[in-house]
Length: 186
Image 1 (cartoon, rainbow, N blue to C red):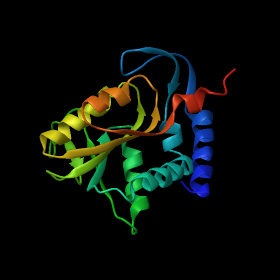
Image 2: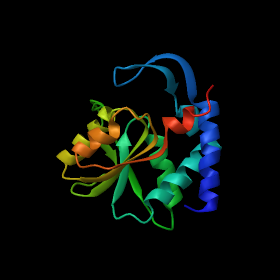
Image 3: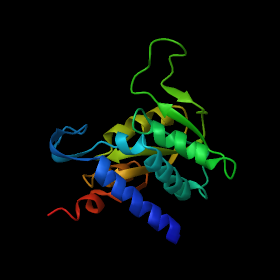
Image 4: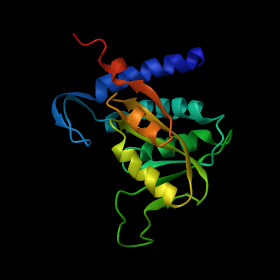
């Protein structure tokens, strides 16, 4: 990782702590209860935060052998779009989104965007806990013959996702973990 990328990661961590780390009692998608919550939307829908995310994630994937990036709605969508845009023209990467449920109208597809059957994909998550949500996307793309090369998460809550995904043969790469976010609390 270059010095510039290290500085970008440090700045992104500051933004996440400032805009997306919430304190209180929260029920997680995994069903657990936590005294903090990561609402990544304020970071991902901010110009600086999303630009940094795009730079960092593109740096992680630019030399990988894969066809597409994608992920489950809603958390992965801004990241997928930003990385796809950042990739042009150096190494164009098309994206797709996996819906939690079909819309019931229009094309009524579970997977929208530039997905193609029998490809190799990298899936994106904003925050990962146990890996249950991203497994919805894994199952959907595997049903269409795709191979999942890896999953990239902005933040791993360190609550079992890496181990659960390893059992599926999928490596997890995290930009940050909750240790990075919570280390300096007193």
